[in-house]
Image 1: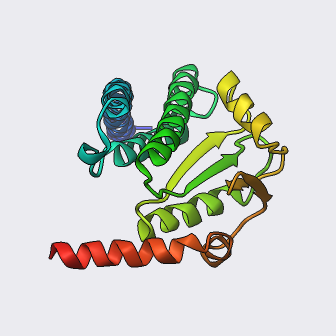
Image 2: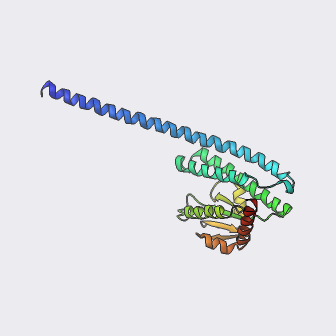
Image 3: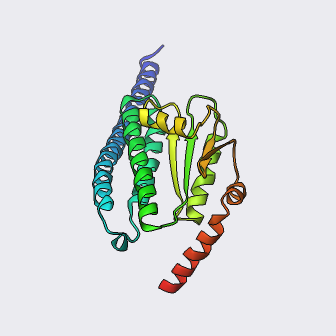
Length: 227
């Protein structure tokens, strides 16, 4: 083979190596950005958990007439969305993700207890739903159940939905499942303090919670009054 032929192959090799290392550099850059983004989400969740803890303390001593509409529910929803993102990017078994889920679960239980106390003390009607799912028991309907509950909260902002991983090693979550006798069948909802199992549509939940109709009308009336 002549020198010209070797030169062609050499240039082809050089170009191939440049492309390879270029793609590798770009891949490393985006991986680094992704790691930074994930770390930022983690730090944000930790800060929001601390912030929510402080809000709990404030709400527990606030007079009924000064309660108004707290942003705590939206904050809990935001933390839950970020945790779902972390689960999808880092995996459900990642130690940091598991730890954050434990803290979030405790935060939800504290909010559930506090809001029940506030409802009785201040005569505020705020329906509750406890949702239990599983990431390891082949729960094909759990994701669809989460979508239905998101739609429910969008339509009825005053409904409080608390989501728990049934298998998370948190004694307080286990206590909840014992109190309401929730079996290892998913998805599971606790409505009016009774467990129901299987995927439920929005209309199914509306039938099980007739009070939602009054809740919707009162919300609409308040919205119209404030315009």
